[in-house]
Length: 259
Image 1 (tube, rainbow, N blue to C red):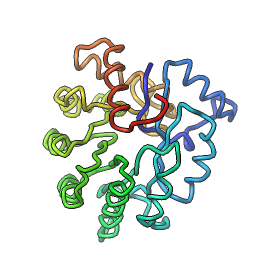
Image 2: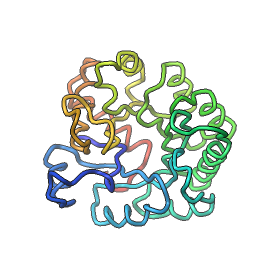
Image 3: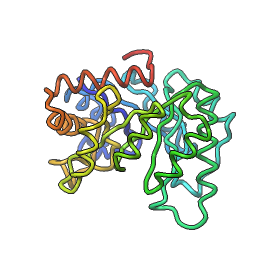
């Protein structure tokens, strides 16, 4: 069985399921995916996201505001801490820095990142970190805000080994998405060969970044198998062993109640 450690179930296409969310969830279970972490990107859609997965014991959630959501309402530390008390909640995020899509003065993005780290420390929940073209500032702020106290995961990792090593030193896990299966991802596959197995997670980031051989289709949690197969081959493991390792890592990091 597999765990998709990062997906956005409220945004996954249901076109091939006749717009039936329950049918998509059944297909996911039948494909061998036992649990999923449905990740928040803004507070406006968070209640609807939570309601969608409320009755599914195999789904956990996080709460946070994505760094690219520049026009969304800013959360407060108190608000995030309060929302993180929900029984399904296992993390704060996704949060972080993205200098690829956001332009101009980005102090607001850094301030939001700091706020999430502060909330995670108060709530005693791990962080889900999004980082793109912001390596130095991401690591610097994690250190300055003492994020190592709670740890977390560098989700959908696409940076270099130097950044991965710095994140590992802070107690973070490294999660690989469908990007690792892409033809031009040779450097990332080298990183995947180096990350300690006990710090590795797998994810889809559905509905984005569909892995090979499903490129061109909307991504969904059942395609996490292709990520697992790629990493298993890189690490010379059976997929069952890779799955067992990453499942245990998920349990250790997020401490969910029902896995």
